Length: 200
Image (cartoon, rainbow, N blue to C red; front, side):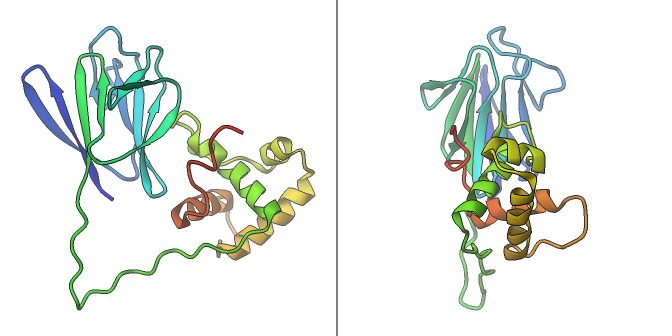
């Protein structure tokens, strides 16, 4: 769902829209989407982005970030409408736009189905998607080799499960982006969530 930030510093309040497919960078670096000049802020302090059905905040700073009055440091959390984020002398309120009401002659688009997964397929899928939740910055899913190393499995076993997963999620047979398409489909369908991608 689209969202926006209300940014308060000094006596002014600015409103900034968030793009679902973009990362919103906050920090002292002049190239940040929101530049915080307070010396307690890191050059890249935090990232707000959209992951699956949720909006998330990733703290990548040295001093941590205050979220609803509680400190977080070096981790990624889901944020809800009304969340207050404080970095240095800047207060940021996060809000999601309300979904439009549905009229009688409108039909909802059916949700992406979640296919049934075997335990082996699920382990491979979690390993594939895990880099997507790392510090809020990594966008590429794991390679076959990285999955095999994490699961202590051989390449052929991983490739076998990936072939089954491609079929279950209707991923096209050709193309170098199959793993990325699979990871995106898994997250969008809710088959993989941030909870699944937490620490081992």
